[in-house]
Length: 575
Image 1 (cartoon, rainbow, N blue to C red):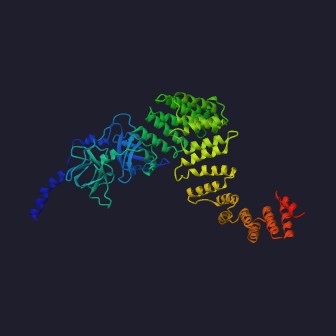
Image 2 (image 1 turned 180 degrees about the vertical axis):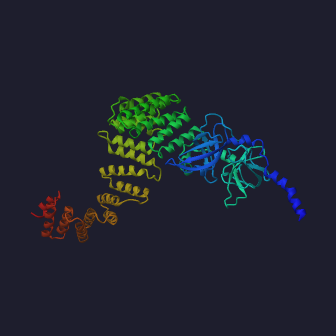
Image 3 (image 1 turned 90 degrees about the horizontal axis):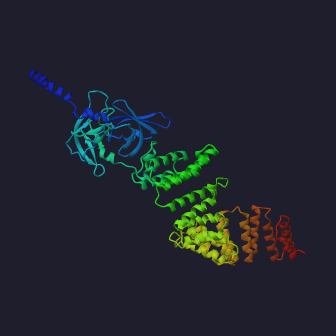
């Protein structure tokens, strides 16, 4: 017993020394790099608090994603009590719960240097929590496991107990280099902790498609732009349809501030000013001012563009789009004529197909169809010829006095051919247009072939009207069996349409099947008792059956109901 007491007494000084182990010399300075983070929600109420640390003198910092999730704004507070706003989210990974952000700092701040990957198993590690105390409290232990995170980065298990408030604190080497952010054990074991690579967190960047990623959309704080201006332009385009006009204007302003020499930013903002002026302004005077700003931005873009012709083209496109939508504008700078003048200046510098396309659109709007046709045909002889450009040529040609319908059909042929073989669904509109012209020329077999093509490219996803119209074409080419099949299909899809039953009766009459025709007439009149055409059809069936008195009764009823063609039948059979 005496020996045990002596042993305990002998060990007490050693235990005291371990308990009072001094912090490494570098820790007193390094602790100034730590900050507390406070985030706020939509209602401006405090949402979460956490720990983070600066990794650059200009305010870049790392922390846990979960601290920022759902936040609309955030601030950081350093060890001296100075508060800085968070102005950018620079990268994030919700799965590994890490985030990189930037705080707006007025001058250089203390920061931690990121160590080299990978820290070996068995190495000593220090956990440095946020503290405003003079005496630094810290955790110390060994790296007990090293596993792969994402090459070349690692994930570490540490023999450092994790106390309250230590999550996301920096994990450092013996030399004071940060290599990880502290994370809890998922099982709740407080005797160990983990560290996700600080190098990995620092490597996080935002790519163009990330602007619509839920990882970022769940945070309302402004995001950093991709470093590459072309990728940033893609991100700008993607954001256009996901933000309200006022928010998107802020985004455009931020893009221009970040990429002041990108002409695309000024052009995009010019379009936004012009097309969304009603949503951005509260008075007519303000709306007019936004049109002025739009032209100023077009001029600003010219300072950063290599092509003056392209700027004239963009100016013309914007002016035409706005003027065509709002014919009440009185400003001479915002007229269709002004747009035409601008695009012709572009053409004067470089006669490009895209410029001719716009000039053709303007001529078409002005009902100068021959000039529009000439422009569209120039486009059609170029590498940017498309189904749309051939179709527009057909539409322009159709408005020229004395045009041959065959020419229009040929242009529509080209539009459809441009849609591939077999044609894509884009061709559907052009096929219907061609059917209309073929019916005018009584080219019924060709019209039916087009209906069949239309059916094929839409994978049979057609309605009752399709079957009715194709039935009409088949009827006119004396394909009564085909016509009957189609009108029955229309009836199956819409059994409540009296006209379809009457049309069915017409087909039966042409087939001399008068009993079936009368049944169709009866069905039609059940749906619409005052449908004059059905009474006329009944009269025709009865006449063919030799029932003249009953037929004349039906004809008379049709006349009373306003049938416009029954008089001839009455004169022929009832007088």
